[in-house]
Image 1 (tube, rainbow, N blue to C red):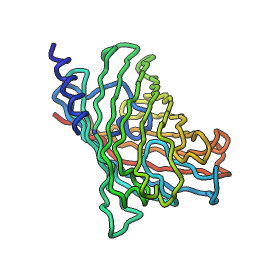
Image 2: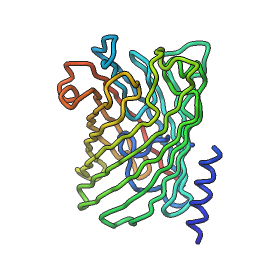
Image 3: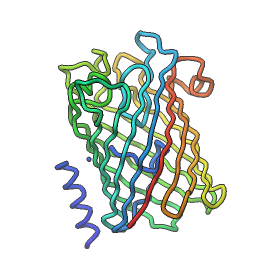
Length: 286
């Protein structure tokens, strides 16, 4: 069967080559895949600002959905290319350009990734769709690990995705993920010698409202293992987002997210937290 051959090819490619994000500008992915022979490019900008973060155990807050572990703020431009290789299988390659912070001893490009998404249950028009997305991330350089843009070792994992379509106006997406996050113990991580947790778990849900033709609003809530092993076990986040259809093939997305140690801090932001702004376009073409 051709789709099984295509799936086998995608998984073989993963084993050779590799965490690209889909359904921008959300963290939570949907179970849909790019049509066979179709292409998609996601070009985005995000800015992370960490506030009220005193030095000490239990204070630092990561930003789920990104690899940045450094202190202070950062501005980056992630890029993802996705190709549909079967009606229910896609593969995606990604990287990002790090505008700030910058230094002369490392490249501004990092986070070289590839993933495959297989929608194994459900079709377009069904109420429920389910997909699995295995993930592989290439190692970054030791200098990039030190500044916090990535880790100088291979990362791998997978995400189980469920999408429910109540009607034409309301849908919801649920993700449960795992990431094995090894790092090079010979170098600092984001300027810190604190060891990182190797097993990163995550769960999230994102209801999406189709308000009118060409306009969707979304909320995105989730929890993720906090990487530094000496700090709080988990990080919560909340996001609001809008997706505007500029044409049949181009969408503009924008979102604002806050992450913190608990939901109270996410809602009011009066303690240590991290805020992230995402904005960019998704372009689909044959």
